[in-house]
Image (cartoon, rainbow, N blue to C red; front, side, top):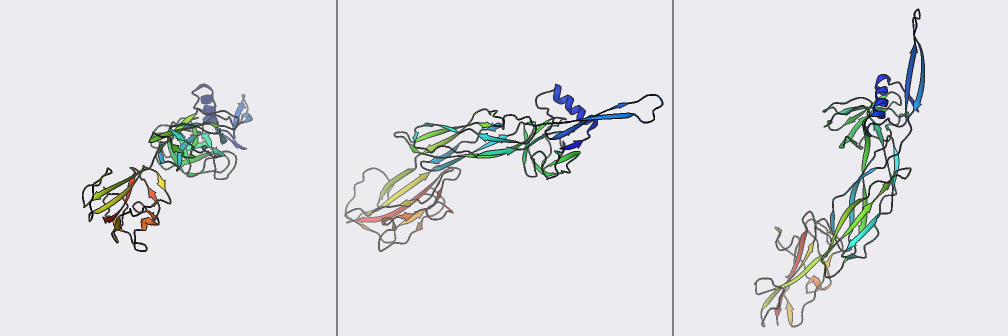
Length: 364
């Protein structure tokens, strides 16, 4: 532990911590010195006496912030990104209760997973800082290791509810130190204002199957963290929307409209069969393969198989796919992909996507 001679600044910190809002804190791992003096007539130099107190860690439940909902297809892994924010006066370790999941119209999802634990740094301001400032004065923590109570360069920190990123720090083990921010303060900082680190963590779940006749369902996942003495955070939920992949087969007769209903055909007609996979937003499918056969009493039109990586409504033109052994590659299974992806990979993107394959036959 180091000794910090803070004089009136730290006296103000102690007073502020004792009588003001719960946000005002004395930072852990700092030694506060209180010095008194005795003087009398004829004494040239007053006599002083000092006593030190070391501030200990006072654990406090973290604040967990809900993630943005995500949408995935059946059988795909969904990742929810939560945030966790320190409220203690120093560095503390946080663990998680086993998350719970409540399913609606979905069965067979995996158990959600959280990290084993997270350590968050925390300190408090030792001097005021005005709006627009990019530096904050904090007490040292007794060790010169480029970390101030667990806060290092690159960390996200929260002051007065606002999130900032630490650019650099000074850490000389004793005296006041400086946190430099990448962006200016948007609110003023007072002596004793808590400065807590914020990190993200992920909760993953592999989606099950949507229960018929529903075409979509949800998994609502609840997360609770605990500090080092077991104080729990409020339960925070995140939502995974699970949707069925839509697969459509249609046919066009002699260049007419593509329809999914029964069509009348005659010998010599040319039929174009089309299959479309519709993949929801923010969902990625791997190993995607379309398989089809040539119907009886029909003859495959050589070199007529075409892949459209953004579907019939997209801007990209269909591309020819080489035949295999004199027939469509769909017979053996054709790996398909969305725009810009490797074979077999479809990425839904922000708004979802379609991938389609056409091939032609003539009626015998």
